[in-house]
Length: 76
Ligand SMILES: [Zn+2]
Image (cartoon, rainbow, N blue to C red; front, top):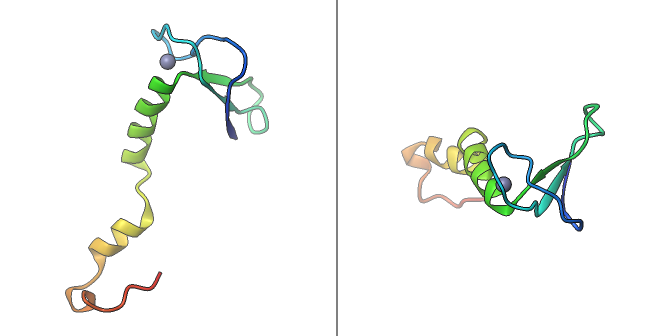
């Protein structure tokens, strides 16, 4: 799966969105479907939703760090 900046003028694939697409998500390698196009606004909204589900690992680890570990050298 690859996200690329789009060069041709095409519509955003999100239902109800009337913007032109800025980016295209290539899915073909993995599923037998074509590219999906997104405008920057839809991509930003999607990113917000995705980040709710896919939390980066490091902040979670920091929260789980026992109190006695705090103040110790953080080497990751
Ligand atoms: Zn859109």
